[in-house]
Every structure is written in structure tokens, then in C-alpha cells.
Length: 104
Image 1: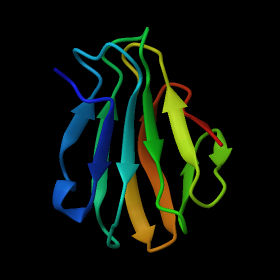
Image 2 (image 1 turned 60 degrees about the vertical axis):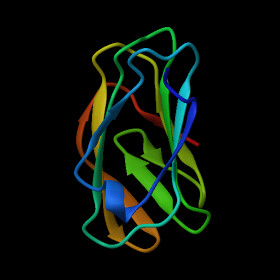
Image 3 (image 1 turned 45 degrees about the horizontal axis):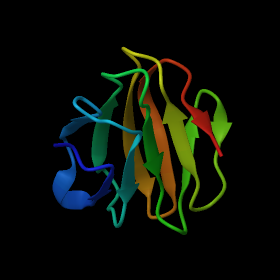
Image 4 (image 1 turned 90 degrees about the horizontal axis):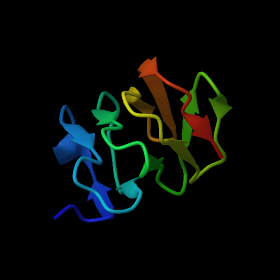
């Protein structure tokens, strides 16, 4: 069973996360991070998307723009993926992206 809310941190850097087996959207909340950390996200099931939530002081930048502090990026299209990299304690940026990862 896939949990629908998963907390990530620096210790999860370099791993791949997806919504495979999920029965609802899966939220990945980055709790704490260090510059250089990277996380990879893949949308396996399109009915239930993937959401990545930044820490309260950080923004996420994708091809769609930049989120507010503590914002998020979402996609629900099968095959979409994104690699997010922590550039500083307040900036997370997409370094690889396929799909339309919207930000808010």
C-alpha cells in the first residue's frame, strides 16, 4: 500500500519516487534539505497525480514558473517526470523535466 503523504529530506536525495499503486494523489513534502540534494519524481498512474511540496521558506522553479515560498508543483500525466535539485536553503529547481509540472 502506498501512503498518500510522504515526508522527504536530505537522506532521500538521489532516490526515485512515484505514485505507482496509489489510490489517490501522492504528496511528497520536503521537510529539510541541503544544497546539492536531488529528488526524482515519476507519474506512474495518471488518474492520481504527484505533488511535491517545498519547505515553508523555499520556492520550486519548473518550466511553468516559480512557486510561492512553501509552494508546490503538480503533474498527473502518465510518464511525466521531474528531477528537483536544492540550490540553496530557499531554492529548489527542476534540472530535468518532462511534462507540465505546474507550480503554485
